[in-house]
Image 1 (cartoon, rainbow, N blue to C red):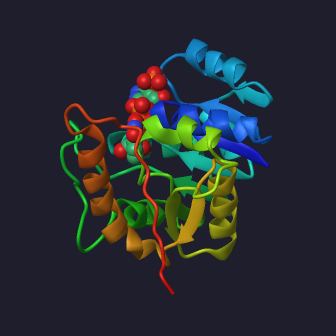
Image 2 (cartoon, rainbow, N blue to C red):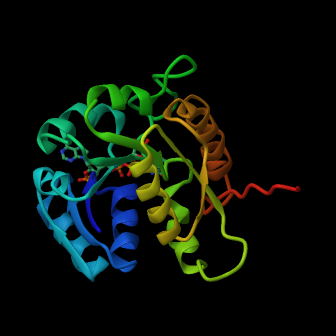
Image 3 (cartoon, protein in one colour):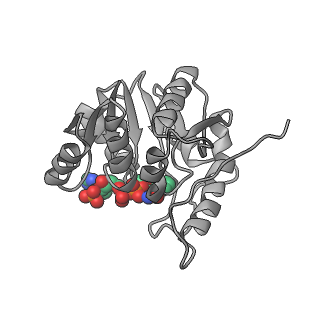
Length: 212
Ligand SMILES: NC(=O)c1ccc[n+]([C@@H]2O[C@H](COP(=O)([O-])OP(=O)(O)OC[C@H]3O[C@@H](n4cnc5c(N)ncnc54)[C@H](OP(=O)(O)O)[C@@H]3O)[C@@H](O)[C@H]2O)c1
């Protein structure tokens, strides 16, 4: 699959690298330096390359991985996302990443979907810290994969997200419609607290187990 990365920082850079290693054609875009995008593509190997947000938006699926304050700018630069699968890991955080600016009665994922009503929005990957991605990928052939929730209202985009989650080494857990982001986004604040608590490792994932 061709995957466009909109926002090639901690999340986009690592996930794009793993998608390329899993055999996808990846375009890294939207960083402040063109050299960084080229370096990421070179290190990812496979069929990865650097491009513009417009190039990224022409792929089969797009990963949206920017700070909440950059959403409007990156969407403007990407152009039409009509009919596109848009996987978002973006959290609706304030400038210093200390609190959610949308919560309880709506969510970042729902607000984003309203900005691009013709796109097929699904939320995935945003509930774990980027620090754990390479560990999870390296352990993908072992038993007991960590879980990763995804949620959305569009069947096609949910299938794409589930495939990418598996490619990255997680066990996809369908958490239902996009409005589940109202619960998943605050849950992510809890995960962040556990990950970045002093003197603890941020290489943290989670696993749900059903007994019966
Ligand atoms: N980091 C995590 O562990 C984590 C976990 C869960 C969810 N999230 C969410 O995922 C999203 C992405 O987080 P992140 O940590 O990957 O952020 P990040 O490292 O800051 O990456 C954001 C990307 O946007 C680019 N960017 C910022 N301003 C720009 C501008 N003016 N012009 C062009 N490019 C610009 C950055 O460029 P540069 O590369 O040049 O800096 C970077 O490539 C956020 O919404 C965050 O809340 C993050």
